[in-house]
Image 1 (cartoon, rainbow, N blue to C red):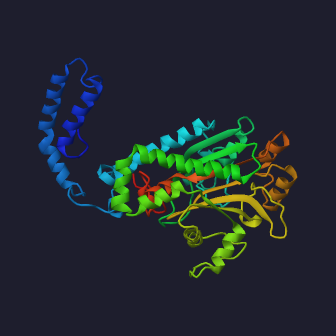
Image 2: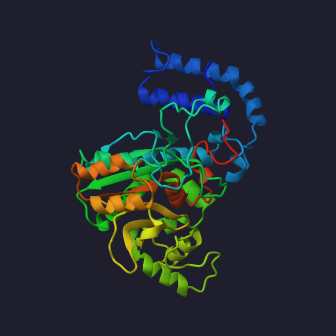
Image 3: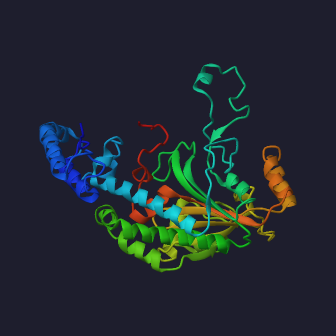
Length: 412
């Protein structure tokens, strides 16, 4: 029997009627006229009305009440029935479509990078290791299912770099995982990343241009195709977000060097929990301050210290400060949205860097990408959930993903 998923019974009939009108009857109750099909739908609706009313009354969501995102988060199996979360899911779907469309129209090849990997791209050690469930009872057994330690991926970047040996522009869009013991509004254990690599580029400007265009074109697509859903968030969840979005879309993104950013922070009258010092990574409070300094326009911060970026970032060889060609995109309300860099294509410098980190044996294959023919290239990654937070004004990242996973919580 066709059910209306616990929504108001009347929605069942109206949806079926609209579907029949759109499709001329094809695909529903094949072999009957539209009129007879509508009679069947009406009979089904009447027969289940009382049952549906009881179910609706027992829902933890009251029809005439507005529930907070924090409240409905307690019911991951039911919150898709609410207006706000069904709107979020439609926006999320449209955003995914827009991202794929952007890359396709710009000549990028979509690559399915693996979820299981033996690499730690970020080098942070915050990994979920993969072993068969039966292995938990065999702790004395040192063998691995894949013969080497294997993990859930933290990034598809290194696999995309492999593909730049065959294609000039590639991208990936899929789940990534971080074993961070954090329950903040900014972190998830499972989230989605959009990652791209461009061959034959020797300038961060090329990468920044793709980042900015991706953000603006995707956002414009969402505003055009989901106006009512976006308005629900801008009106009821984040008043004033509409104006902030318009500012981001009509203005060119700002650019600061890391050194300039530190100088701005040190001269700021704001009180920081973490003191801004050259050579230290930027904290969220620093990122938000820089965005405000730039008039709440997204800002690129470029050329970070050599010692705080991963081994693959291209050395600028600019002593005494010594920086790498890395870039972060900071946006209002979120902080870091994208991170990228030019990749070190010079074999001698890469080998030196890997040796410093004790990674030469692990990344021998990565050296071979340079040994057997490489070109200057670079790329970036964008956090999909943080992007949705930015455009909708949602404070907690757990409210922009269907089934959030974070430390001490894996419901469903």
